[in-house]
Amino acid sequence: MKPSAPLLIEWTPTRVRIFDPVTGSTCEGASVIDCVPEAGRDAVVAVGRRSAFVRTAVVPAGSLSTTEGVLAFQMAQTLPLGPTEVVFGYRLGENVPGKGRRAAVGAVRAESLTRIDAETRAAGLRVRAVLPVAFGSWLAARAAGLRDVAVAAYANGVLDVDLVKEGELVASRSVPTEDPLDEIERSFAVMEVAPLPTLALASPELSAARHEARSALEHLADLPTIDRLLFTLEPPARRAARAARRERWKSHRALVAALGAVALGAYAIGTRARVAKVSTKPTGVFVDAARARASQTEAQARLDRATQANRVLDVALRPPQTAGDILRAVANATSAEAWLTSLSVTRGAPIAVTGLALHGSDVSRLLAVVAGDPRFKEMRVLSTSKGLVGTTPVVQFTLAGIPVGTLPFDRPTKKRPTKEKKAPVKAQRPDQ
Amino acid sequence: MAGSFAFLTPKPRPNSLALARRALGKLQASATQTQSDARKAENDVRNRTWSLPPEELGRRVMDDVGRIAERRKLGVANFQAGRTVEGAGLRQLAFSVTVEGAFLDVLDAVDDLEKSGSRLAVGNVSVAPESAKAGEPGRVSASIGLTAFTLRKEDE
Image (cartoon, rainbow over all chains, first blue to last red; front, side):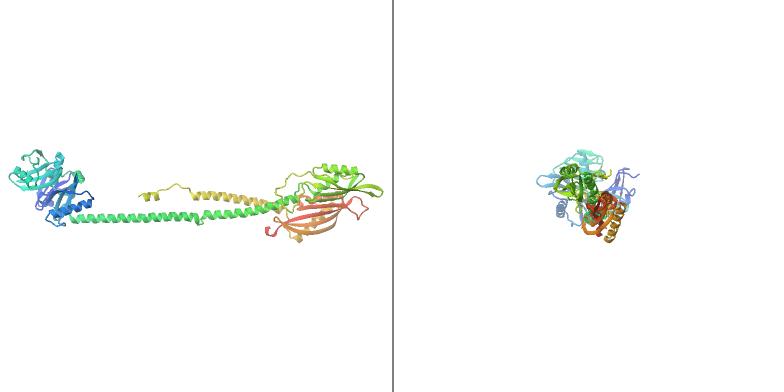
């Protein structure tokens, strides 16, 4: 099972010390490769105080690029190195009213970072953070809840002093001395800081206000806090590669966004084209609808013509009252005293009946019988005159009237005639 | 992102194709019904009209009238084709026939002509005593106007 705690490497150009928090063992050598217990471990590289530069600065509030620009300018003013020879990282602290934000900066030579990168790669380590070891002291002060403190460690005749002022790491020294307390006091004067209480790390023999068993290096095992509050330094090549990757990623994102926009545009155009196609181009449904409409129109025209013809034929061939019925009805009204000499029935015209009668009263009776028949209306005597048949005096008469239901059929009726037909009239033969 | 969401999220909308298909179904059903009605009406017209050219139709009507007159013991004194009238999708051919005989036989003959199977319409009937054969009382002469219907050429 892989150990979870990272290897802690204190790196200087001439000496490397590796502390394994899992085993508690320490190894020293000329390079990382000499002391790595096993490959594949996570590691935090702390650059020794003599190889790193620490200071604080106040930067105006702004974007990260603005902050980096301001700090790069200040570092160039402070350090005797060119801007490409040094790599710095920083953490932003509290606001300084009216000035901006306090920034704790850690800087290392680019060459050192390149070497660290090469050595850790060769040792098969996964470097999680590279930063000055003085920030381990800052973590110790923070863990102890001290905002203004001198964090000191004395071992092998070398005193390490890191000053934390107002919660930020402001200075770091590492000096060989026989009198560490005197050197601590001198550090306050050198760094122009008022005397501060001392926090001794892994230095029980050192006289201090507080003692802490773990060293500054051991405090750098807190990777989550480093990720959250501190920074990591990268060699320029790796930083450039990362920047290039970021640019490539930006380009890819822009390309993907452009392709997405094109795809959306194509989708939108396709959708509209499909809608337009549905609404304007004759698809199967619309062709069928056009055919059905044409068929309906043609069938309706045929139906109208046939209906009109049937109306004419109904009137002509199925009249409510036939000519034969009219003739029979008039003939049945005659008697031995009044008989017909001519009879004319025409569709849509009054009937004309002429005859002879023995007396005028016989004509009246004939008229009464015919007029009483519902088959006729408005029956009347048009004329009467006296005459002789041989020696018998007779009355010649002419009757006229309208037979019901005898429409002319040269023009169609508005409505179908009723199918109710008048009952046919049986003619009474003279011998009956 | 919002644009993608707005574009790609399905939105409720009426399925125009389904509506069109439903409307098409109704339209086709209506067209079929109208065609059926038209066929029925046209068959009705065909059953009651003649499908002969005018010259043949005259001969056919004369034959039919002759048969009826013979059956009713009437004499056909005259048969004459009249004018042709067109209207309402029909061509009307008029004929005039004069028959002679007993009054009641004339009435029966008129009934025969007016039967639905004859496809002849009786337009007018004028009955008068037959003067030529005075020795036979009760005989009459009847002039009957007939009309036969054919379909117009373009409607056949």
